[in-house]
Length: 363
Image 1 (cartoon, rainbow, N blue to C red):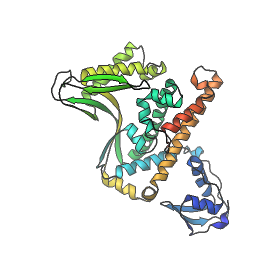
Image 2 (tube, rainbow, N blue to C red):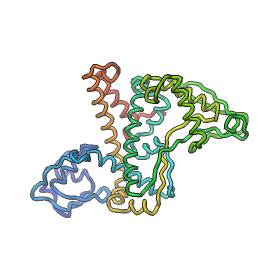
Image 3 (cartoon, helix red, strand yellow):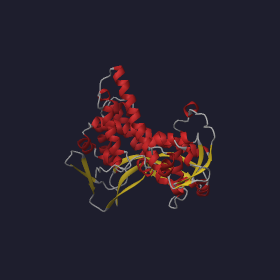
Image 4 (cartoon, helix red, strand yellow):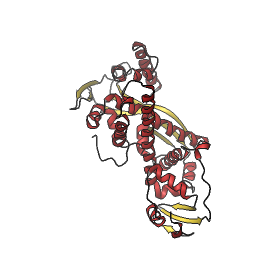
């Protein structure tokens, strides 16, 4: 690193220009983050949008610090999510309340790409394109959904601790609304027709004898009780203690197919999924957005923050897969985690479902 080419007051158009001045290689993702942290040992700088201004060049480099000793190895990752959520709440359309499906929020934050939700609906097509088994695809989604939810909830908890938001997990239903009342929950009974695409994934079509429309909305207390009752009764039928055990036994497709049939027959509910419900004071969010630590960066550098977050998510998914594979080999356990191609297949799924600039489309 050539520090002779920089001095206090110098401004560089962007990160690449500063790398050229320092005669160092440009990095991305976590490597770039580590590089920026290393630079701070030799000089201080401030980012204004994409531009970087040198404040001071030290005569002696500062000693290295290991952030892991303070439990902060993931703090930057969570901080990025926190700032992007503030940016989302700051938008004019969100007037003190945001009710958003979890998968939509992950997409908004660029933690996943457009293929992620499509692959959930079309696992056989995804399996055909990637040559990864449906069982491994199911595991990928189960583990990745859990990781994404934990990360976002950690950021939401930080915002709650600052008294900026109140938030909760909420349930959304996909519902066929009709004009009259014939079924158990006061609606004309809708009919369901099912066929298959060329990959074998199920396609559903809905209609009734009168005017109807498909809506997605927050579940009522009555609907939540019906969903819980249905799931609980089927858990007993399947001799499982929990939903996790259903997945462990590989019965999730059959289980949720039965749940779907019961809910649609009784209440015209054809789909249900988890959402985040966030309430906030707009003035406080705007004030937080405008302060130097958030507003400056997001005003000119939103794309770079999202790119860094996306790279970090990819790194975590692959890193966790390597740990699972190593553990499986050491314990000589059976199953696909022990296969030598397990990590490579995880990388393949990560690229097509998570990577920001993936050019493969599942549509």
